[in-house]
Length: 332
Image (cartoon, rainbow, N blue to C red):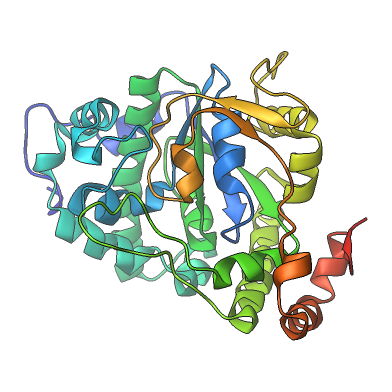
């Protein structure tokens, strides 16, 4: 018996049973944070055949242990949607040893473990941990699909290692929307102080990084995501600037990647989106927005970012930024 889940008559089916059913489709938004994933995920999540869940990678710590706010405004443990997911997947969140699950996650899901994830035969120790954690995720995604009634789950975790990990999870069909944004805009955004409103018990800010560190992450994460396509994972590149300039066309393309027929998308205009309530975990504070939200490219960095930092980021991220169609002054 797994050490992370207590024995219970209401336990979910074994992983082998899950993998024998029709796979759950997961549209994974990958890339570097501050690339527009929150608004893109929630815009695509208004389609009746999708559910946007935010960053599932943070479920155990921020969602269940810290009990931070769900996108609906309730604490996650009090959110009816996530309570039903926990009951469906594990017979209730209380059956899990969350500290053990978190330790298991940390032993498997790290960027340094990506080479082990792509090996046909990883080391026995890592393989055991990977199999156990993938089993938990398999049950979790299946439960989300069952509770939401949506055939496509939109996961905006973004992390490179989690994208590679999902390839090893039985019972899911993962497709990757690779989001990129001008590196200067990403660097400027990560340097700003941004409060995390979901952390209601304490004052907490999102991490801040120097332009040089963000440039390194931008290069490493985007380069690594291209490897998924080489391994056969359906992957498509989307630029944040294109998504904001033509949201209807770009969101339709995103939904097609997930295997859906987009339809007319009445919730999207030329420069706005109508957002309903979401049950999202972690992410940008924009996930709490509801109603009509303006869609526009945020280029504040062009006037507010220190010119020396702009030049540094441009130099450090060349030539990949050029390959994505970014030139000095804006995308072409």
